[in-house]
Amino acid sequence: MKKLLLILVLLFPVLTYAQKKDKTPSTYDLLIGTYTKGKSKGIMVYRFYVESGRLAYLNQIEGVSNPSYLCVSKDNHFVYAVNEDGKDGGVSSFTFEPNLGKLTLLNKQSSQGIDPCYISVDEDRKNVFVANYNSGNLTVLPVNKDGSLKPVSQNIKDEGKGPDASRQEGPHVHMAYFSPNEKYMLFTDLGTDKLNIYRYHSSDEKPLSPANPSSISVKPGKGPRHLVFSPDKKYLYLLQEMGSAINVYKFNGGDPKEIQSVDMLPAGFKGTNGAAAIHISPDGRFLYASDRLDASALMVYAINKETGELTFVQRQLTYGKNPRDFAIDPTGKYLLVANQDSDSIIVFRIDQATGVLSLTRNRLENIGNPVCLKFTSAE
Image (cartoon, helix red, strand yellow):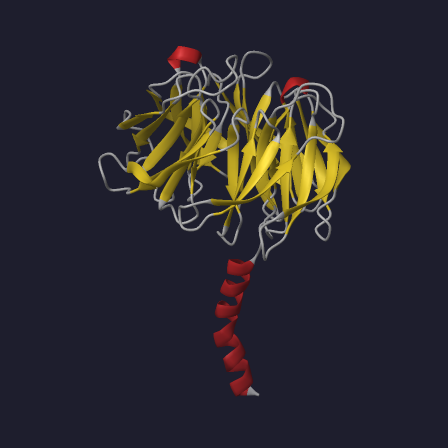
């Protein structure tokens, strides 16, 4: 009996550590990027409760101009935001305290582009990457050890145009997104109907260099916008804004091969449309994509894990105008959609067996042009 008690005493710290290590967080912080042309004054932070899908206000940082897209460092201690201010486009860095939802400005740098609309940071927090939409260039800003930003170290300007003279008169870089192993940086160009592919070497002064192939093209006039990889890293899903379509590729180690194209619009649809955001559920079984303007809907697809192909599941209205962005909570139980022109964030429950969305009573009103949602652990 004494031996048994001794074993239990010795094992208790190990068991306790394992339980803490394996414990799934029950609360998350939701960071909300906005346009500050209306009610919003900057970036807001809400606490999200997984058990109920409820949101509670935590904090905000004011005086940040048009922080329309955000990214969070892997260690959860820093947040980076674009300042989508036309020719005065900038990038801001912040420290972040998850327990309080508190953001503190570190510094701001020029993005060396017009209307920066997307930002990402590598896992080692060595560089930040910015897509400047109206100037059609991708810029790289090194990161200091304290999380602040250095000036632009590399500026890549795309070339060309597309068939739609009103929207594709020149390059329009829309997203800068890493491959899962961070060997490649992929950036979409709505203006030239291309997905550009560059190799990434974090230690180089100019860390990006063209891969082989250096780009792939989509059907003219489709306007590629955002992309996402499957959790198993095999497949790439490319959302086309102007065409409201999704192209599916086998990634092939940086040499994507198209295997499917899916039209997001329902038969007979009439009106304006503009696909916006695309994400995959944490278990890799379902893909979700938003369509804006008159469409104002979320599309749900089941993913065939063997082939990567998509099968239609549901078209769900967003109960608001212009669903610019959405986010799936890390447990895969809820999807939150930001309706930019309705100043609202709507919470949907996800049926984890079917992927189907259902409306909950949880929502945020009077947010002020919400355009980016990012979940991060609050624990």
